[in-house]
Image (tube, rainbow, N blue to C red; front, side, top):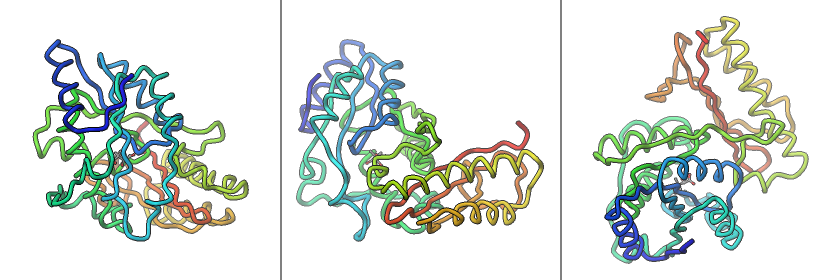
Length: 283
Ligand code: PAF
């Protein structure tokens, strides 16, 4: 496995393998791999001749008071895990390689960032859209795989690929969970044992919502209230949002009339966790 650090070398590598008729699958990451990342790698590897994993903690998607400087990192372990998953390349550029002096162009979406996590993280999705656009142009993959835990991010990427005419297949990988239901996240390492137990409030409340919807509850306000009560019944929890919305547009719904996305962001101690489930009342 090669570790590539420059844009030029990465573009040359992709061009060379593609001229040989070989396909490239990209898994964009910010590193500190867990089972969720490894699942994305397995999916991409199964679909393409070459797996490229990008590893870049993107500063433009962090707001001023967010955890950019504290973002966990273990490059040697990540390189080893990517190699075990059969990666041909880890693309791990320095910050100046992606954002050189004088950089001034960014990608912005009109309405998708105005919902869910975008409400409290106003710069986040513009930063994600910009860096992912750059990664697509640098790696030139046929396929790119993203996790469904960041449901809004996945929708943003699907929309940008459509709007900017990228010829790239976007694949959403199902959420990977610990045995007890906690969605895997690089941020889970910040949880104390007590907070770890309270992290279960997210998956438990999604189960509750699914049960209620399938029993016929349609009123989004009632569902939101029940989910909120369950979460706040756990110690250390503070709700950022509990939302029932359209899975395509992410616009809030008042009544559940078809598939609905139940999306949660909860601060457990100082760690912000997210989780979601698309629930179809007809299934
Ligand atoms: O999901 C992530 O880890 C990041 O948002 C991504 C897609 C790698 C862009 O920096």
